[in-house]
Amino acid sequence: MTEKATFAAGCFWGVEKAFQRHFKNELTKTRVGYIGGIDNHPTYKKVCSGNTNHAEALQIEYTPSEKINYATVVEFFYRMHDPTTLNYQGPDRGTQYRSAIFFHSPEQEEIAHQVTKEVQEKHFAGQKIVTQIVSASTWYDAEDYHQKYLDKNPHGYECPSHFLRW
Image (cartoon, rainbow, N blue to C red):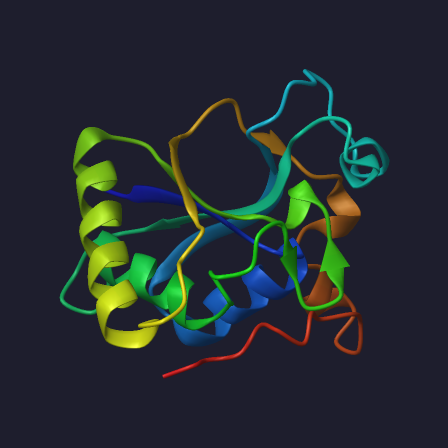
């Protein structure tokens, strides 16, 4: 049975690529899109305006195993971006670039809070993690040209803040 996880950590192209690289054999599906906003028909242009309150996000699907489970993907999410910056990653600024975990079940919510606490204590002492942990709302796929963008455009823009910190 597959599970779904949804994360926002800045520009969705780089977030997707980081997860694809790290979990290349474990992910059954990745897609980028918009979540957490007020517009029922978000587009890239609208989301970039900052007026919809949507986040650029990545949704992954995987089959839990010894190599991958919800706790491991949440910890990886924290490793690959800076969760201490409010509404930005690197040069990307605005609420659409916020750090957020969108949970799909009470169990995911509990795990997200536990992993966040552990990561805060172990890796970000002296800095506050500002990642939102919120219930997943309606997901909207981004336009087709955004899907697997960095696979199609290997030299395309990739946020410089997407790298493994530990």
